[in-house]
Length: 164
Length: 118
Image (cartoon, rainbow over the protein chains, first blue to last red):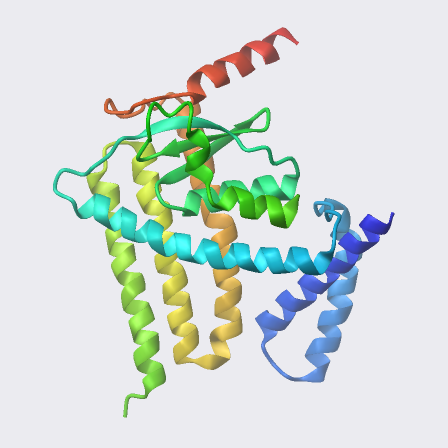
């Protein structure tokens, strides 16, 4: 029950922030209308939101921030990697689909891991079957069976810290 | 005169355009659907984000909206590429002949067998 209330609060605040960013004005009428609409939508839709995890919300928020910074860095690296592979005359590719036992159980964690894996260098998430993530890896290391966890590092640990 | 703000914004937009171009080049050059999706998703997400930020820097009143666009792009763009890749595999698009390993096919077959039985 406490968790549900917490989820409700978070969804209302997120909707209100989104409203504020979209309207981007300082008129107080806009903000009052936004507050009313965010409250109504939050109460109507919070059941659809994934449940908030346990633990200290502030340390989780901090870990999420670190996750975002590392994700940004990885995105830039991924683009340099793509540029290198595309512009190289012989295109150094060693593609394959590997199976990664991520060990992440929560729905939100899975969503963020799969999304961020797609944006990191050389990997594209395909599917989840039985909590195992299937990743198309453009540069498979070794035979692609033993060390497949390397495909999703270092983001896997950060996602575990922020969402588990 | 052209201010420093415009120059920074234009730099962001130019970088974005460069990445978009590389993504399009990857679509043409790389061998199969999955490799092409890799290039396309990464470059086009990053390029669009860079362009949105550039527009936000040039006109600061648009910056909050641009940031919202960035958040939605980062959430939805990987999802769509993931859906396309999965649909391609399920409708029988083969991997490139130089591929090293495929662990997804066997797992998918096992899953279908289990679903067929239950």
